[in-house]
Image 1 (cartoon, protein in one colour):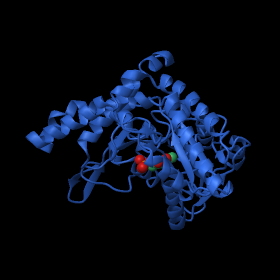
Image 2 (cartoon, helix red, strand yellow):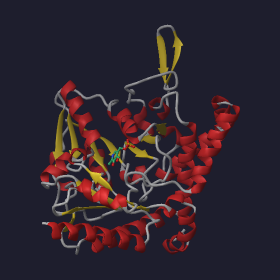
Image 3 (cartoon, helix red, strand yellow):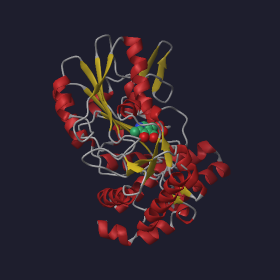
Length: 403
Ligand SMILES: Cc1ncc(COP(=O)(O)O)c(C=O)c1O
């Protein structure tokens, strides 16, 4: 689809999204409600499980399960043996990160806007191994400085790991440039693409990623409780997963097991088959619309929302970066983010709080307390953005009147 065709299809796309009739949803970066075709696939599979038994329903769905891997492959330009489907993006990311062998003196380089769960993992592994965690400074746009990264590289840099788009803002990191430097330095490049997959075109080769983690429930509009990991074919076998089971490995004799040769070594035996099928359907839905067309709609929508919010007295819009995507963040002077979100929710307008602890390096550097996150998707309309801006203006002015 072209951008114009996507816009023309909006009434249909919104009418097949039940949430559009219920709420004004600006929390797509948290969870983007699924369209009816995705719900149908999930519900149908759950019905089959109830009717014929879970294992039998899985057997019946074997080809469609494999098709879900192929859909992920098409989405990120990978082969199916490079894909693992797991419970969520954090577990996907963990399975790659904890498999990288680090030792004393090894350096992990990350970005200022890195996601909290990832930094906790760096700190844990640094404590255990004596590796160091270093934060690459930002450039004048508030994104990772590619020049500073180039200066920091040496033979001890084992891992470069960044969030492509942080949880707390629309910033799109220069991921391909980072990938190029990682390749030159011989460092492993682990990309957290949780907020960008489904929102913008993602090709693992173009980005130079050795591994990439993503989720179903955000910009892909799939179900909760499922995510995936991509690992480049030639790096799979050097990564020994932190956990193994009878799916990730085979117990071949009393004393021996063999680890799965493909990325399925990062999976585990039990999984929500309905969620895998729902993820596959959500990806096909997005691919039918066209990821280019989705991005061509989201980027200007979010820019328009920033221009609606910025002039409101007391409101500060906070997004950084040369390129900005669908996450819009702001504060209302004198009103805690949680109170703004609660007041909006009372009007059936969904936003969320981005707490300091999710992106501490960045929030501390900008002296920010918790902030409000309003994220758009291609479904978002100008009318909804005006509704949000009017509601935020009312919250800001009622606070100004009280103080
Ligand atoms: C940048 C980023 N990385 C990772 C995650 C974690 O994803 P999941 O909750 O699917 O594990 C999030 C969730 O909000 C995120 O925004």
